[in-house]
Length: 248
Image 1 (cartoon, helix red, strand yellow):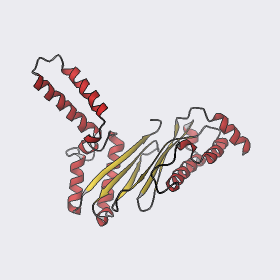
Image 2 (cartoon, rainbow, N blue to C red):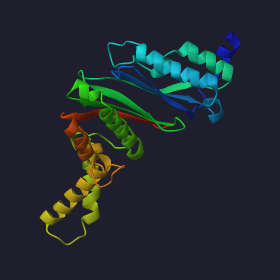
Image 3 (cartoon, rainbow, N blue to C red):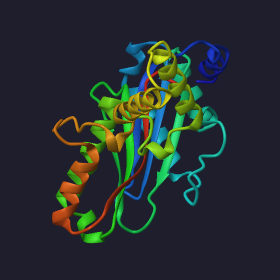
Image 4 (cartoon, rainbow, N blue to C red):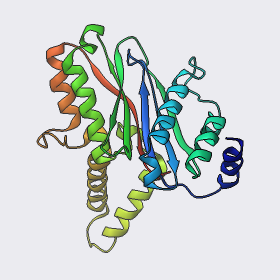
């Protein structure tokens, strides 16, 4: 085992692009952790030892410093001794590429995960609810999972357009103005065209404005409204995180 750990330390600088996205959600859905653990080959990613390690890392991260969402520095140093031990056994470099923890805000709502088959794509979303009983209903839980699946499928930038960075908006506006600069139209008309293109951009990249994938005739916001109305409560998507294996 000592020889394996020593060998693992030597190979730690090798490139690792395969692996798994895993999560751990507390039973009350109040805390959730999602991590991406990388190895060098898909073969190792499918082994029982690697999969058990990835799950243990997620579980350990959920239990670590539970009073804070901060996981405490470089995620690659978390459970490093255990990682080196498994790396030595399997003969490949193993790294924790990303790790995020959500703590639910308020008393009602849930942290809901979605893991795409193959465990190379994962989503974790916090959905808040104005009523504790409604938050425990099947309709609310189904909505939260559908929102997570929407995020997995469409990869939105943010929940709301107000959360899109100013730099991103400036870049998009510059592109649109360049596209229409040769059109011989009044400046006010040009600006209206540019704003229309920006609105379309938001409809494609902002979660609540996207077309709902399971019912394209309505937006995600309209779908949420349709579910919240019979529950007689307000439902709010607070935030999300999306991990695609290998992406920064």
